[in-house]
Image (cartoon, rainbow over all chains, first blue to last red; front, side):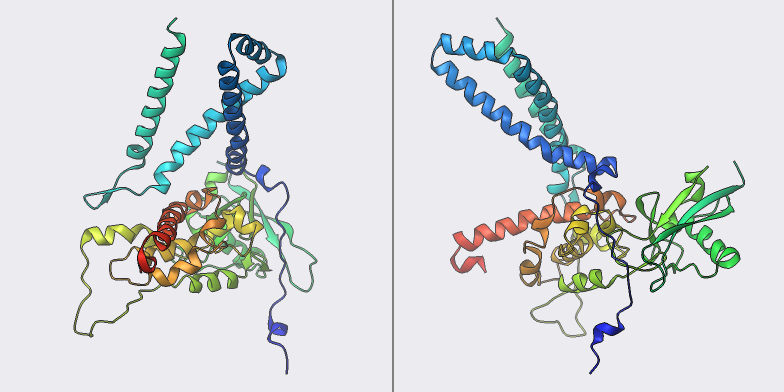
Length: 135
Length: 246
């Protein structure tokens, strides 16, 4: 008996390049969004180190602040800041896709889901900035 | 506007060519021409051996999907003049085996589509005299996902499908969700295993390009993310409720 696969037409199977994510800006943006989680993790670790230094007393915290002013931590934190902002913005923009909220049978527009996220984010950031900078 | 434009078109003759190559054609540049018109001009006047799929010419049949300048497009809805002065590169849909020139093998998609059971499943069918009534709100719940024309542009745009061909893919999941959200359907439980599989929704990393390239605004990326929530709730219910909430 002849195998049915012999009747399959010959075809060319293209391979996906290792650098597929450089082919389009949308793909690169996706990779940067995924990579941003590393910087978010770093920010969390940094915060924990800061809190630990704070609980150990003023001498430790002064040492921590001195370390933060070093060129490498400073550069890393500047890069992290941009990635964390990028992470938050892309997260809020994707939220309306994942949440299909229906009100009286109609789906709420994307802006109605994304805006409250931004408002809460800005409000909390402003509150933290006020606590830190008031004096 | 110049009166001619260059098209670079993928040619592949199985059995003769080791791999696809690009061939250049010069066609008239007309304001009202879509890419498909230019391809038909080549076939009629320049090279009759050029192979490509097309049928309705009006964005309904989903046959003429190709890669135009790197982006998956329906060639019947993509104007050549938007790419002037050119050249315009026309390639087969990415991530599918190429059978000849611009024609790809769609078998994999068709198998996956059938697996997601895109039809109304009822535990007990009504008699032929009875109707399945639906309110406008119930129609609205799934209508967007029902607009899919199976053109496979979303598969060509999805890097996850390109890297992992086992992934069910955007359209198959969106169509499963279309029936899950239909008030007449009772088959959501039967689709859960296929959709909630690691090659189903959980393979999706939410690149979101499927939604951007969809010519019918189906938004498969949204369907997948919504189903992730549904599947997670079902998983929790299977622990918390007696008999898994069935």
